[in-house]
Image (tube, rainbow, N blue to C red; front, side, top):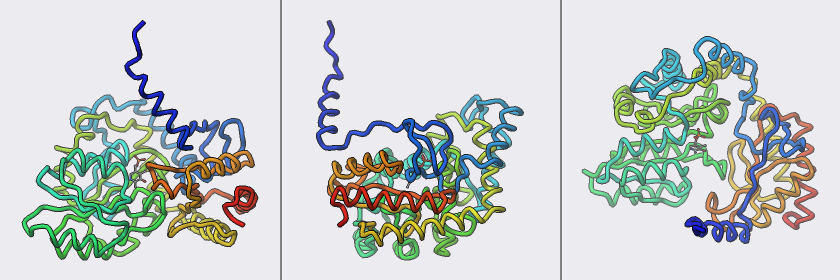
Length: 394
Ligand SMILES: *Cc1c(COP(=O)(O)O)cnc(C)c1O
């Protein structure tokens, strides 16, 4: 018999299990709602990026159904061949108006938007100056570009400035931050980063995946939140989180977008969104613009849940957003706590290395606009019980 050339993977998997880093996928049955059924168990869902509940909003569902009836289920090609439909252009125009920029290009995902843009804009002769906690898709884009990557400690403006200052003035460079950091829930220091980018002639880029639909007017992002209009050259957003559907986009000048139409590899080499996705995204923009109550409820729930966790004595880090980590230290403890909470009807996924540092394992909680106060109070009661049982709080 042939020996399995992939046998070494079993040793890797065993090692993950020994470190408490092996996670089984939880299976969702039914809608991705704030109170949902996973693995046959009804739970308060604190692990979804569906911040505003738009993934199940009737207007989005109807738009998707209508688009399927009218246009079918697939686009048939990449955007640059025959896969650009009028609705793809409409979504890009709508997003450009929403973001107050000249132009927008939509990608299949936020991941593709980041990786495709960074790798298209940069070459091996360029330098990326990047916050240590920036998203993996930015890092992959940097790697694909073969540009040199210089990492500064999380939110450390002085360190970022020093890196920029040490580079030759003629060096092409890009300064990149997340708008909201996905594991900490804190905000990138956008105004200060814009200032040093301007000082040193760097391209300024922000990845607003967790800010889209959450920060700024109608959820238009951190550039609006911090009043940095005109100071950020490349804004990336996602349509997969608060917007409730799937996709990513890049907002910027007409020239940037035209260039990406010609050079961004996911745009050139991967099929465009099906009509249902695009139509639902357009409907989501309608909802963001006409139903402000979802953002208001999101922030009301966020304040309630954060205050509850903090008063119980959990270490919730430095979050400023609806993402609130409960930092417990060891991955095994985080996994145990997550499992115990799940057994009590609360789903808060544990996150360990390499997504966060080895000694910073955590449960990551995200509230949604659609949680009831009873849902959140129940979750807090269970956090209190399980946290005490495991000695995470006293
Ligand atoms: C989720 C996320 C992405 C990827 O977005 P998708 O649309 O899910 O591919 C990119 N950047 C950050 C910071 C994210 O949190």
